[in-house]
Image 1: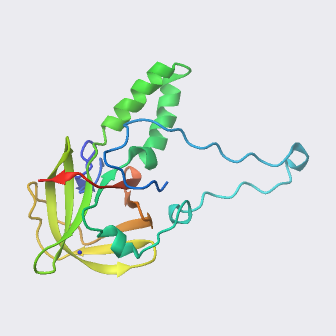
Image 2: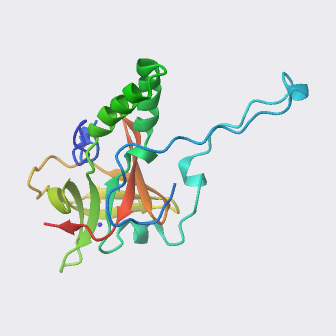
Image 3: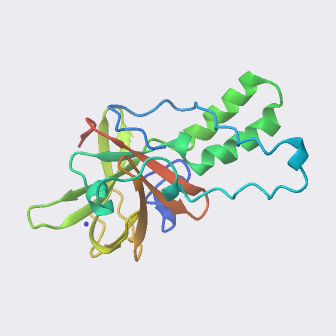
Length: 220
């Protein structure tokens, strides 16, 4: 300015400040449904006449190159006032891993798959991040735990922007964690900012974790 089961505990264990160890829809008034939405099927290949000679399908583009683009600077989006970024299971890589696992486990039983996916989603509470400037112009990176329509601050770390690109912001902690569950801050953390309504981090265990902008959520 994350540990499995605790999005706000990133494991600097990078997991101790984010999620269990991360489409651009507009900000919503409340968290998204727990488990839903299926992935778009991959584009079909060329006709049979081209089979065997057509090049392999293009590799998936980086997230920052997909979907709507940001219309403001990455830092402005990250530090937008009155915005909390809550974990989006549906947009994050753990959902993809869970679907593969649950498909194998449930077979053709849809009820069994739904139960399996619900359990996978439950391992990642709707925790997240917010950024706030105090009266001394100091930015604070605050990780939160959602409790109904309230947000409880778990970690509150003073930070400064170490680097900014068109699609990312690197924050450098400059002091101790003053939250309710203090930890030793990391040397730095990189937030991807792919569009106006999402941020993301790369978790070493769970992969890319996406957080969706929310408004109207009260913080304690």
